[in-house]
Image (tube, rainbow, N blue to C red; front, side, top):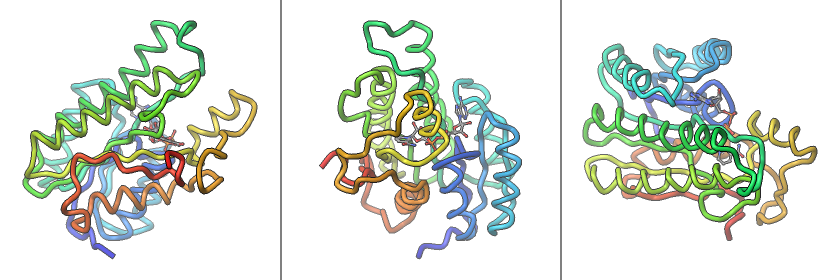
Length: 246
Ligand SMILES: NC(=O)c1ccc[n+]([C@@H]2O[C@H](COP(=O)([O-])OP(=O)(O)OC[C@H]3O[C@@H](n4cnc5c(N)ncnc54)[C@H](O)[C@@H]3O)[C@@H](O)[C@H]2O)c1
């Protein structure tokens, strides 16, 4: 099991779900974690939870990933506070009310693309500017980046953008490793909110493993991609979907 002792890792969307699960594993292996999220209360309890788990001097900063300057300031402050950035995990994301494309609104389209695609671009740019050789970045894609999903056109398009931002960054930075994960349905507050809106649970029958993932199962894959054990993996979009795309 790789130790992250003395490593500094920045995580967006770290107050909840997959981001919080990733932060807990990293802290338990000795990393110092710099969390960013729009949810101040969630950040406060996440930092308390991380400090109980272990690791270094964890911090939580309110950052909207749709705010380019706020993202850059947070990454630069992470480096000035901790001296370096070894890893970054770009998980902040959103899904809007499900609506077919013919009825999609300009506002919902723009907001989804802004947070999920522009937001990952702002994070990647800030991270690529400060990371030294050997650094590793993982961003949140989705099974929805690989196929059409009725009612989720904006979400699908925004996650497809993450895939090619990831591959482009990997080509431009052979001294780093830049990857994405493509989770299937995972039991987080995001999915719970979607299920409440739909009035039924997110179907998983298309997967080989017919259940939702626990957030820790996605987090383990992210931690692997951050670690030296993934030393020859870059530019990849790793399926962590219980065989949904098999
Ligand atoms: N849960 C799933 O089934 C699933 C599947 C595929 C991909 N994903 C992706 O994984 C990522 C994490 O999702 P999750 O399921 O853990 O969701 P979650 O809702 O539990 O966590 C997302 C976090 O992002 C934060 N956030 C939202 N908008 C933000 C913004 N503008 N700036 C900063 N923080 C913001 C939220 O406050 C929340 O803490 C997302 O990008 C999501 O699209 C999730």
